[in-house]
Length: 339
Image (cartoon, rainbow, N blue to C red; front, side, top):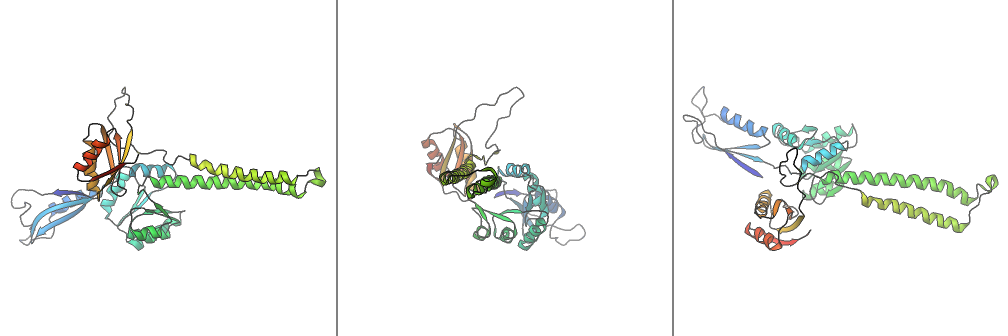
């Protein structure tokens, strides 16, 4: 979570420690117009404003915001390129939801819904076509169960994982279009195998049974029939193995820092990447501390950490000793280089 402290300062006795008083009488009011305006401004930015007061005196305003993952907008764009309409269901207020939706680039937003409301929205969407639901919380469980296909984030609540049909173990939104791409390729492969198997057997079985002997004089030696059936199985299995060549991530988002380029500039070649395992990360703040410590190394261009998996992806080059020392200096434990 990202915490931003906002202190309101104004002339006279309307400072952060002064009473909030109505313009019409001398009674303290619940929320002043200035405070409301600031809260609305923060909500429009996708943050949830929290007001703190002691008695009738304003102490401050804290805005709490979920940081959108770097790969989320690209994942949403991939889904849209695949012909999927992306709808965001959330219990947050409308302004916060619209701000987050604008950053992610989703097509439609349904905000302020309870668990049963999410399930009702899924039922309404199913009247238009098949629905894929992705969620990670307890409130998402009814919707995951109702959807044609429910996918849960691996780091989500146990009840959401139990309610889903598919679990994304890496907890990355980019795996949603990848899984959809794999499922489509698998279904296409099944249709191909069924077509060729039907065509093959519709000719081979009557021939082996002697159906064409009187008309054309065609016969088949049983040994050739056995060989033909083995060849059929070989073709089906070989066609299925083509799934290993499916590119699940066709358009991954750029990670890290990218230097601005002019019209005549040529981008430098990308440096090798490193993936390390770090123990002790518990939240997004932990991710930030590890990233800043690693990006301070001379050979590291950028770093991206995921506290759920404990993995940190680096762009650049650095020795294991340098990486170990940087992670230790940030207060975490370096385990090993995994890639």
